[in-house]
Length: 85
Image (cartoon, rainbow, N blue to C red):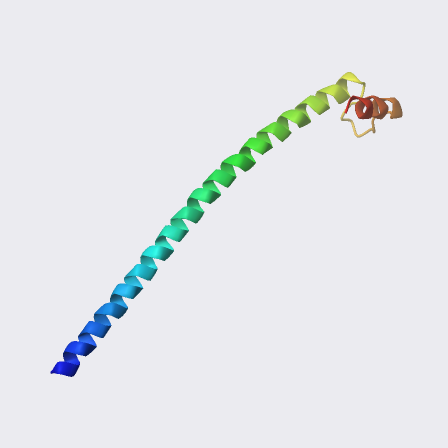
């Protein structure tokens, strides 16, 4: 009967350890989820900035006489764009 008691105590400690490991993993996964959310917001913000820069660049190209009809901008347009940057 004494061995059964010791066995049950050992089993209890093993189960407590497993529960602790599961809680640790759960907190780790939750932290990863929050970090990914923050990273996604950062990437979306950068995307918005880049979209705005692209829109401004396209407007500048159009004002310099380049159309989206498949033709390349003239060398003068490229020179002005590069000088502005």
